[in-house]
Length: 269
Image (tube, rainbow, N blue to C red; front, side, top):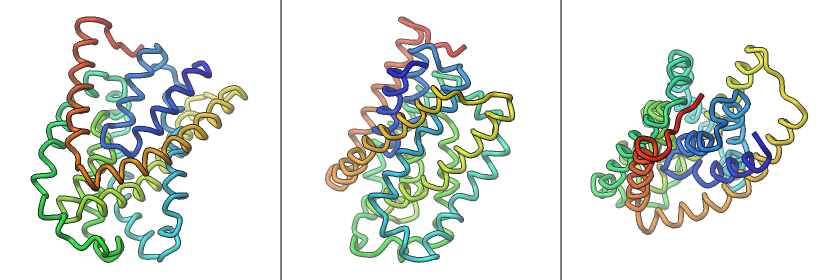
């Protein structure tokens, strides 16, 4: 991986982490274009660079992280399914992370769902937007959203998309479901990073000074880009809903299939 490639991947991560378009899917496709997707450090980079995007949520919503113990308990409950299923299907997930075709199909299926989701849960928007997040999300609701998050173990699904839709199935309006999805990203991505680092060293790899610099630069860039992406997403979503993201997913998913089968095989070696 070169510095330019690291910067490009960091920008992609910052833009896509909190949008319902799958940051992991975009990173897999981008790194496959660079012929670096199969590299062990690249796989590590695509996970750790998410820390910068996570920090953006902590900074933008810092007051929420000091509001109550109840807030953290609900995040913990929502995080539990990902821990158990992630450990159980770790090897399967690693194999899926090497398949651009899985990414493309997941993008298309998710796109179809996003085109319909606003109509499916139209009544949710009648919920009083002035209600605070911790008064509208119960522990049972948090747990159910946590199971929806596990769908994102399939590359291309989108963690934010799965959790937002999961929240809306529990009668949450778009804004509340989206913000809870942001908050849930913090323990989820911290856990994923710790696990990936542990596995990396267990496999006998070590980080060079250059690779550490790439990780630092990548996280700073992802943080800055994510700040703008989050603000723009919340504003757009509250006014227009999910349809644009649904169309985007369909276009990207179909484009990946066409490129892979007819133009440039996206193989990860």
